[in-house]
Each structure stands twice: as C-alpha cells, then as structure tokens.
Amino acid sequence: MTVDDRFAADYRDLRRDVQEGRSNEAVTGPVTDWTSDFSHLEPEYADGAIGVWDDLRQRCPIAHTDRFGGAWLPTRYEDVAAIAYDTDRFSSRAIIVSNFRPPVSLAPVGGAPPISSDPPFHHDARKLLLPAFTKTAVAKQEASTRAFCHSLIDAFQGRPVVDAAAEYAMHIPMRVIADMLGFPPEDGPQFQVFVADALESANQPPEERIERSAALFDYLLTQIRDHVASPRDDLTQHLIGAELYGSKLEPMHVAGTMALLLIAGIDTTWSAIGASLWHLASNPADRERLLAEPELLPTAMEEFLRAYAPVTMARLVKEDMHWQGVEMKADDWVLLPFPAANRDPEHVDRADEVVIDRQVNRHAAFGLGIHRCVGSHLARMELRVALEVWLERVPEFSLADPAGVVWSAGQIRGPRTLPLTIG
Image 1: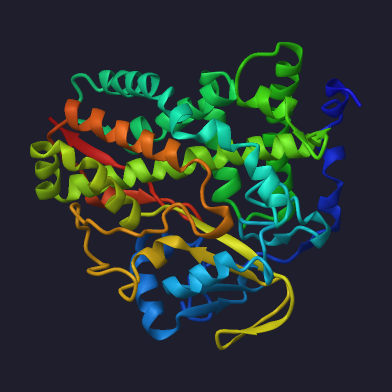
Image 2: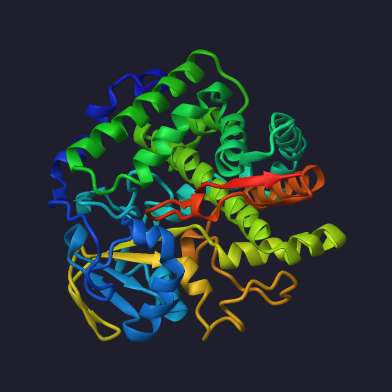
C-alpha cells in the first residue's frame, strides 16, 4: 500500500465503525438537581461551574445523571486522580461526552490517538508525537508567536474597548497550530467552527454530530493529500511518514491525531489565555503587581492554570462495578473535571483563592495519568508570551461589562466573549 493509496478513500468509508455505536436521545433543559441531573452543557454550568463543584464536593462528591445515557461527575481530587490512572477499569476510546458511544471494538486505538487510546497502544502512539513538543522544539515557535501577538494588538489602535477572547486569545493558538501542521493560516474561521462542533454541540443529534465530524475530517484529508502531493517539513508530513510496528500509520490514525492537535491545541490554550486576562481585568491588585514584578509571571501563570484549568476529559466504564460507593454500569460516561480537582481544599491550601505567588502548585491543569497533555510545553509558551505581550502593550485594562463575559459550555471552559476597556 503506497502513501497515496492510504488517503484516497472518503472519510465516510474509512469510519464505518460509527454504524456500530450506540445512540441515545438527547436530554436538554435546566438542571433540576446537580447531584442527580447534572449537565455540563447547560448555561448555568458554564456560568457557575466553580460553585457547582464546591457544592457537589460537600453534598455528593460523585454525582450522577441519566442524561447522555448515564454519566458520573467526581469532584474530589483523589477520585479524579484515581480514575485518570486506572486504565484497567476505565477506557479512553471516547473522551467527549455525547449521546453516542463508539463501539468497544474501536479500542485500543480510538478515533483521535493517542488521547483516545488505551494501553498498550497508547504508549507507542504517544511516542510518535513527543519530538514535536519538547522544550527545544517549542522554543523555535516563540519568536513568531510573539510577533503575531504584537500584530493582534496593533489592530486595537484607537479603540477603547476590545474583545480579548475573540480578538486576541482565540487567534494565538489558531496561528501556532496552523503553522505546526502546515495549514493555511487564513483557515482560522473554519478552525473555530470545528472546535465548536466538536466540544460545544454534544447534545446535537448523533447523526448531525457525525456529519459535523465528517466536515472536519474532509478538511484534514484534503490537507493530507496536499502534503502528499507537495511534501514539506511540518507535523502533518511527519505523521504521513511515521511508522508504527513496522508499517505506515493507518489513514484514520493520521487524520485522528491531526484532529486532536487541531481541536485540543486551539481551544485549551485559547481558554487559558482568556481566563488569565479575565482574572487580571477583574483583580487590579494582581495586575499591578505583575506589572511591578514581571519576574513573577511564571509563578502567576501556574496559578492561573490551577484556578482556571480549562480541561475536563471523559472515560467510559469498561464493566459493571461498585466504585467508591456508587454502582457504575458498563459504558457509563465518567467526566474528569481537572478544574474541580484543582480546587479541592483537601488537596490545595487556600483552594478557592488565586495566589499569584503560590510556591507549591501541584495542579492537574494538564491532566493526570498516561494521558497528561503532550503539548504542555507549547501551551505554557503560548500563555506566557500572550500575557507578556499583553501586559507590555496594554498595561491598563478592566472589564468593560462584567455581564458581557460569556463562558463556554462543555468540557473546555473559558471566556468566549471578554469585553475589556483598555488604556
């Protein structure tokens, strides 16, 4: 099989396994009781997730819902960590909670390796990505990232109010990931649609989600075929040429990994940058201290990552079992809210405070266990550079309209609208 042959088929032919999955009817509307009817896709969760976690941690630390065909929500650090490390009883073959469960046969690879992969395949798939995300490799991206941040702020000239989420935070990871994958940077608006389709539309009918996923993979396969026709030095080309167990990667392995890098690489960092700017706009004392002590930024950055960790991942229960006092059924979803774990007072001193000079900070913003984020060095670089450039160019800023701040629903949480008064 030649490289060209691998990517000749249509996505819908390559992903026949979707016909073998299990669907259930979507349940939407206001939550009646967070302990027994939670939904991370409703507006009240997007707006008040921190309060929800605090309440559940005290009243019902492992909440349940019949929505999504059955799901669990642990909120204590020890429970989140235990599940994240337990690959024997919890599968990663799907990591976005929705009303569709892919078939068990999709394991151990999953649809977006390595994040969707179970051992032992996960280890080998992850190794393929490590060279692109070392500190040395990431450092090569810093100068262009810094220049791009400056160009975004140049566009604010003469304007008293800007949307720091939609006009700044969002674009930085879009450009970085596009450069790494060798995608046209002008395709940013498409990336935004792909992110929303993957992460914020989980209550759409399964057949609609499958079609939205097909649009993403049609785009990715077009980019792959373009790289096959015109090879260049980037991460897409690396995946096309990579081998595993003596053979080139399967086409859906290549495309699935690219989908992971595009979706997760954009939304997580976009959210972290936006949340950090939201905090500094809301807390002028912290903003002024960072301006006076710029050397404190790396420490403050880790605290922003702890307090406003954007990522919640999911697992699927492998078999019926009794776990920590609850009865989990095979194929139940389990959400792993790393942000809730980061705010557990049993794990973190002064957990509900943002302490920008916190010296000991064992946060889980990048996940726990074998799926800890492979791109953590890249995300930290983007966050640091984005904040350095912003504080240098826009030292004075505040919330223009606190009620106008909109947080995203779903498993990635961050400001989607962040109107700031600048200057």
